[in-house]
Each structure stands twice: as structure tokens, then as C-alpha cells.
Amino acid sequence: MIGVLQFPGSCDERDAVLACERVAEARLVWHGDTELGDLDAVVIPGGFSYGDYLRAGAIARFAPAMEAVSEFAAEGGPVLGICNGFQVLCEAGLLPGALLPNEGLRFVCRQVEVEVVNARTVATGACEPGDRLSIPVKHMSGRWFAPPALLAELEASDRIVFRYARGENPNGSTGDVAGVANERGNVVGLMPHPEHAVDPLTGSADGLRLFESLVRSAAPAPA
Amino acid sequence: MKARVLIRPKEGILDPQGKAVERALPALGFEGVSHVRIGRMVELEAEDSADLEALCEKLLANPLIEDYEVLRDQ
Image 1 (cartoon, chains in turn orange, cyan):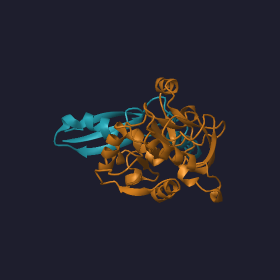
Image 2: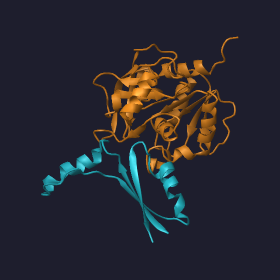
Image 3: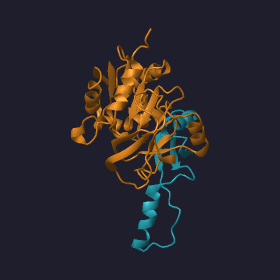
Image 4: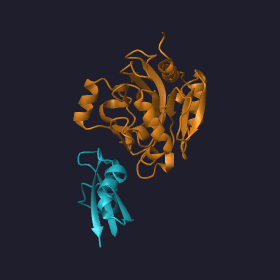
């Protein structure tokens, strides 16, 4: 069972549930919930949690459900943050870096090519390093930032999970980074929206690979 | 007590909002204005002003990307 968090102001939670349901069972988790119960994996979806007041994700990190997610992550549970979910995870200190307003100061909404850098995380286990995925972005504050020392540390420890393909960076992020992982690789966040790329009808089904990876990582290891 | 918290983008971090404002000024006839940086100002009243720094670190500012300054008004 995959749980998709729902904050006041979330707007992609239903698409995320639909995407998860292509590969597993899924249900919504209200932000006020303090228990995650039967969940094998958690998705923090896109949107504008709590109006994105102060900074995107700054208030949502204090939601009761986020405490439960922190504990779940600390025990090694797979967590995927998409767009606003990525911002929430960075603000919560579960992922490194911060998301700043786009370099061009415009909301960007378009399909981008994303390269898988690390295929050993909970969100990329069904991919190979170097795979190119066509996934849309739609965000205002998507410029992932890390100071040079932090970026070097993350590169050295293989925690850059996704990069925008050459010439595709839509927001001016440091090192063309589109997504990162925590040290253990069980918490991953990215700005592009894999849940909007799960059917060829809407241009690409590449996003499904992330949800397949999530399910695979949640499955108990064979005895 | 009343206090104001000034929050600014850290030096070296691109501030596209400041840049956009800076570029708009000459068109309005304001010449010679540069290094425009845009932050936030938070006004608040606190019973105990000792906690203000912790409050800034934890919520009002993100220390990775922002500097803050607490101005205590009597």
C-alpha cells in the first residue's frame, strides 16, 4: 500500500494516487494523521501546501503527518517527494539543499528530458544509470540550490539522483540537478512530475518507472 | 515586546526578483541604482524575546539560503 500525503493546498495528490494504482494499491493520507498504519511507501505530492506561505514547503514540514513520515524514513521506509513534496522534504531536513524561485522568474510548465544518475535509490531501482526519461515540470520555485562544498559532497557520495539533460534545465538549478537522495537512498525528491507521465496518451509513460521502483523497494526481500 | 525580523537572500545567491526590479528602474527614469536584493520583513510581538533566534533558524529563515537579523523594538 502506497500512501499519498494530502495537505491543504496539495493539487497533484489524486494524479499521484492514480499513478501509484498502476503498479500497486494506494490511498490518501490526511496531513493531520499521526499514524501511517499499513503503508509500505509514501509519496509527498505536488501543489502549494499551506499556500506555500513564507517559503514553499516551510509550513508543511510541521504537519503531524510529516512527523510520522520522518520516523518512517528513519526506519528505512521508501519516501518519494515530487515538486512541492521535494520542497517539503528539503525544508524538513530529510533531503539536502533548498529550492529557490526559478532563475527566469517565470512559472515553467513543459516536458523535459531527465537523466537518471543514481539507479540504486528507492525511486530509480527499475532504471539504469544514464536512462533518459521524458517527464513534465511545472513549478515556480524549482531552482535546487546547494553551496559548492555541499554539491561536491553529494556528488562524491552519489546522492544526485536525476539531472536535467544538457540544455534542458528549466530553472537554473545548481549543477543541472533535478533530484537528490538522502544518505541511505530511501528518501528521494525531484522537481519533475512522474505522476503526470504514466500514459502514452499524455505524451510519455516514463514516469511509471519511478513508481515501479518504489513498489520494488517496498517489497520484502526474498527469503 | 515588538520585534522585526529582516530576512535576505544570502550573498552570492541569485535573486531574480531583485534583478527584475533593477532592470525596470531605468525605464522609469531612475538611473544609477544597482545591487537590488529583495527579502522579507516579519513584524511580530513576543512575550519572551529570547526565543527569537531559534524561531528564525527553525521557521522564518532557511539558513542555507537566507541571512536574518532580529531588530528588537522596545
